[in-house]
Image (cartoon, rainbow, N blue to C red; front, side):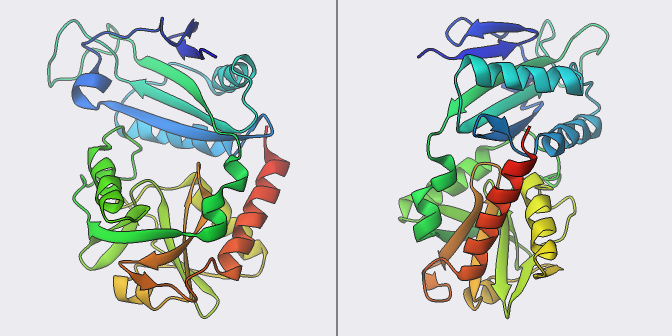
Length: 287
């Protein structure tokens, strides 16, 4: 089935939607994005994603071309038109397409932002086989720019990191800066030691994950201990469990890092339970 997509206020078949070659998202990676999961035809953590979108736009001095209510309506319409039961809605807003390429921002009164949304159908998203067997991670140097808290489309290095992992038979990579793990290529990173969940605190060094916030909230409500601090690779190698979180993977157990088996080399009970809690509670709150 040909997807229906949304572009600048209109719905198009995916092969009919077009943007200018001068769009700054294309030329400058001058754009931000969000990905919201869909389970049972409903949006997971939508408000958190909408709020983070506004923050990213504000940090880049970019105006938001759509209201919260309109954005929610577009998400729901795309889910309906594309018959998505489990999957993702991708949203991107760029600074728009001025008449020519220039490093200087275009006048926002003369150049409107470009807004694009499309769906991805992912049957079985909540019951991923990877969650049952766990994923393998390698470590790489973190060579991204310094404002990782802004969810921009500057994703070349994370893509390179995923390919580094794939080349050695791993599933993903954790990035390391000054001896400490920052995050995964498209996810937040965690270890569990002596029943305590440890994850890096919020700063400009990592993305402020929406799933991260929800998982930590649910963990505390379940009386799990949480410590937000930097942790080293050596700590990760010696952890009892490890896991990642993101909008598309939810809570995903990590069973190996740089060839080092984590715990028993199988998904641990705490990370598996956190996944169950997150899915259960998030479905209740889905809209």
